[in-house]
Image (cartoon, rainbow, N blue to C red):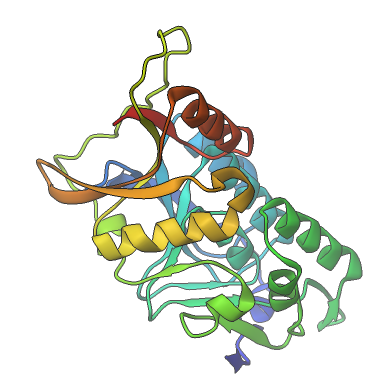
Length: 291
């Protein structure tokens, strides 16, 4: 999809900006904190996001922004990836330019079929004109590489000129090699009063090994279809970590309803712990569970 809408961010850049509204908006039925980002991104938003996220072990980040500061998009994205958060663009969301860069950091990264997620080359405004920045594009390329994105994906997010936009959707995400779960997003974005943030579980390295089988849990999902999409996203984005581990989707339930656990295994305990350790090294969240 090639549409000319990046002028939104360009026009906004000519007015005073006070940063995006960043806040925790409750906990969803999956036990994830909901962190929302609304509005144009400014350089100060990196520190503001990190401050809000500092004591939140599990979260989904809902993004709705026309773009803004390149450093904020990359900075927030680095924070999202280091904490193992997922990202989502809801049904009415516009997440373009720098916002799209932050959204890329989520695993899984999710979008509603009606959301608008867009990318273009980095630029500065000089004498009222958008001028493409080679240095900015180099920073974007380096950031995308750290996220594990391919050269094809880097080309997709930087090929459009500042006055145009490359829009990502279900019909072109595979071709762009940007693994994304597209579908309903209510389960992620709706706060549930009775829900509680799930505790972080860490395997005990001093436990005696036995002959039982273990798996690595990486996520929970509201439906079988979404769980299957998460499995595919991990297999595409992290083949060197997940390797040949068998995907396992387990149905579970709590006071808010049914959900699905996404795991990889089943293996001896030391192999499962090694896989989880590798995920933790690259900023992902996981825990090892006995089968």
